[in-house]
Length: 144
Image 1: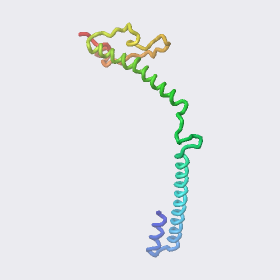
Image 2 (image 1 turned 90 degrees about the vertical axis):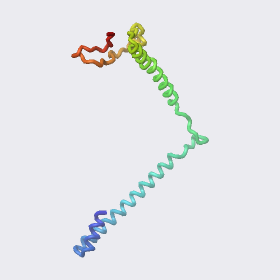
Image 3 (image 1 turned 120 degrees about the horizontal axis):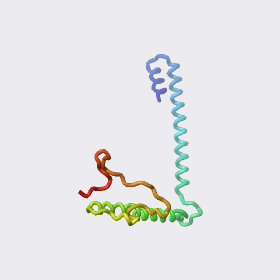
Image 4 (image 1 turned 30 degrees about the vertical axis):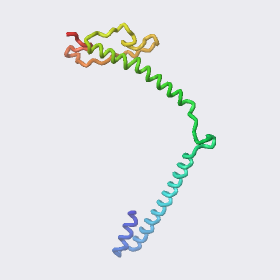
C-alpha cells in the first residue's frame, strides 16, 4: 500500500517518474500476492471447516456415540464433589456455627475436626488466625 501511495505521488508531481513507476509496479505486485495468498488461506479454512462439520461415515444416523471415558469422568467428578462437601465444607460450616453460638466445637469427632488420619494422609495445616501475635490475639475465639 505504501509503495502504491509513494509511486503515484512521485508520478503525480512529475519528479522521478522512473522510480514512481517502479514503486507502483512493486505495490501492485505485493497487492496481487497478498490477494492470492489470502484467497488460498480462506479456501483452505473453508475446506477444513467443511470436512470437520459432517458426521463420519462410521456413525450411522448422524449421532456420535458417547466416548468411553466421559461417563467415568462424570462419576469421578460427582464423587469428588460429594467428598468435598462431606469432608471439607460441611465440617467447616458446623464448626463456624458452633463457634458463633459461643460453644466450643467437639474435637473428638474426627470428621468435623480434621481429615481422617487413618488413611495415612494428614496435610498438617490449620485455619489461620485473624489476630496478631504481638497484640496477644489467638486463633481461638475468647469466651470473655
